[in-house]
Length: 128
Image (cartoon, rainbow, N blue to C red; front, side, top):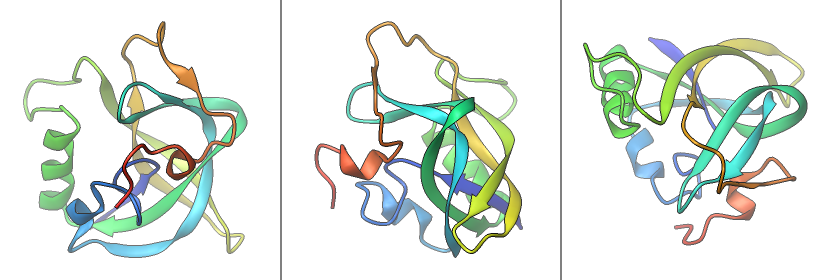
């Protein structure tokens, strides 16, 4: 089992939350970074002064690998053209800190729109 921080369509209320079935919700929190609207989905750039809101889950290795494929990361092929998976420190709303995996954007940001609130669910075009 491993910990995963999600910040976009996979969150509760997001259009792809069904993909988290089988994962264990551990709490809400934030990481240091900036979130952008690419198209119908978000992009995260880690680090900096801003905070990105999201959720922490515990998932199996098989679940994590399936989510990697959804994010465009194919086993044995390294990083995708859009995302890579990196470790970050999550500041949970409870005050605890946890280390977790997150998908960070490595693609082009030239036409991206920065989301100042750091909360994708405030912007998602078609939330479920």
